[in-house]
Image 1 (cartoon, rainbow, N blue to C red):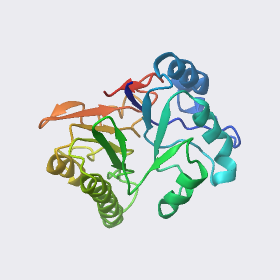
Image 2: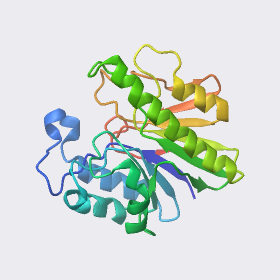
Image 3: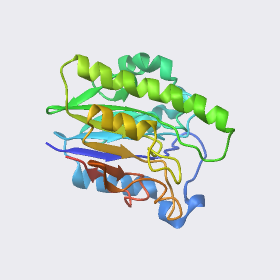
Length: 231
């Protein structure tokens, strides 16, 4: 058994959203995902997919995309990304009910891998696309959701944590954030995130060990579509 992670599948079996317009590395990216996933991930493994699963705007438009993920080997835990319009954070329980035994959705809850609690939320960072006041509002809401995830795991008796985000844990230029502080507060051993695409963005946030926590960027193009082993 192993724990893997990768994010940003950006699937579009139903809607017309080709990804190769974003760079040659995205050509045939779905085929690459399937090839390398089946090479590395076994049925007994657990994998967390850190958001941006589908370009579908609602559940009907992304049903085939989720079916592709469901068919991949292993136990799959999905985190919400900024493009996952099908996923209303307030209706996560409904998704978990619909896909019970097939896919798990991580939001205001936690899952387990061996003696670890897998906690997480979408997160947020400032990218200059909105006002700073709007950024603070979304960031603070995501921090509340992340704490709920940690607290639900702690209440169940877990004290070893792997923390997952979609957005990077810091905005560009930051040396700490509410997300990194919370990881330290609860003693998370690793923080796993994605969202950053293209060479110009791969170094937007932390890599490797920072203040005793291991940070992983697992954007699919950064990994060349090969899932990264976390444990």
